[in-house]
Image (tube, rainbow, N blue to C red):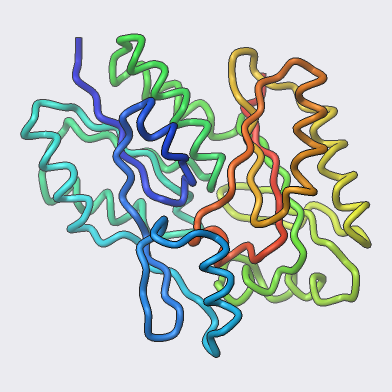
Length: 277
């Protein structure tokens, strides 16, 4: 049986529980607030948003350095592992490119790099399914094929209080972001071809929640997989959505996002992610 190590980056927003359960190596991105820099995961969301309020500078993020991936890959190759490295959409971050550079540096055919064309829980779902397959003794080729098949099957919808963070971080166009500046308008986004796009816009939090609960009610989730609800200090948004999946007998996990995703999403956003049947 092949020894397979799963590697990812911190934008997957994996919980400590999942990291330990599936023995996943997480390589962190970096968040910059003013003159200070923090590895993703080193601050709680409360600490991050408090620092953000006090700072005169808008927070920024930077991708993983290729050398960081190189060191991780080399360590596990030396231990006899084959590596499956699963990452954030290349349209949203250069982190996957850094992973590819590291693979090229090592000139190893035992490293497989996958661009999920997704973000946050969209990556997490693929990691969970990959982790299950590693535990089941599946080959690297089998796991790679399954994860690549998720590209068009992981569905998401997210509601935002504001699009300012996404626009200022360059993850959404200024034209699309202008909608978020209209008083009371809550933008609803999904992902297409690895990029965030405007799906709808509604007025008020109640209608934003309804958009997400309608999405949840209509979801056709692959049996045996988990729905993941992400949020940035928005428990009031995700709890009603979880109740819908609970009533359908679908396993559902609520996960607060990390600081990199919070930098771009801002406080108060929530999203629904699932693997389609």
